[in-house]
Amino acid sequence: MNIPKVAIFDMDGLIFNTERQFFKFESMVHKKYGYPSRIEDFTQTLGLSFDSVKEVHKKIFGEDFSTEQIFKETRELVAKDVEENGLEIMKGIPELLEFFKGNGTICCVASSTVTPMVEKYLNIAGIRDYFKHIIGGDQVKNSKPNPEIFLKALGKTPFNKDEAVIFEDSENGIRAAHAAGIPVICIPDLKYPNDSLKELPIHIVDSALDVIDLYSE
Image (cartoon, rainbow, N blue to C red):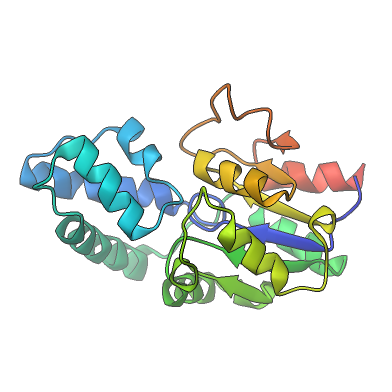
């Protein structure tokens, strides 16, 4: 495979192990208010904007469910955990970023998380300088599976869709990449793509280390 000119990374569950972290603390908050925590419910919300998550929550938990309050308390617990314990970078990500840097690939982040939080996490982890452009969920009108965020990220560069690759872990992210017409490599985290989606990525790999192998063949 030709090394891409542009590499667009999702963040949560792709660069950092933050999806598992968020689910852990969200489960604690759900229990406090008497709501169940099911991983299959949580994975429905991956890659979505806050407003879209609210709609999913109301369908699952009812109209009285307060996504605002649940998220507020969950984020406070996550922030405390990050301050005390730092962030866990997913396997192979540092090596992949260094590989792309050495080959002149422009790296971008396209995350549904708001831009200031993306910046904060990348800085805490010491990998901010690898990324030329950051597009957070606050910079787009439509969340994944709409392709807007990926098209905006690519638009920051002078390159075409076939010169880029997207790295995603979630089904909504895969849908968005496919809708954007940009090749996507899936590195699953909490959920392996279902049968209707697993043919969309050009590859599904276990870790970012496998991506280096693909481009080194």
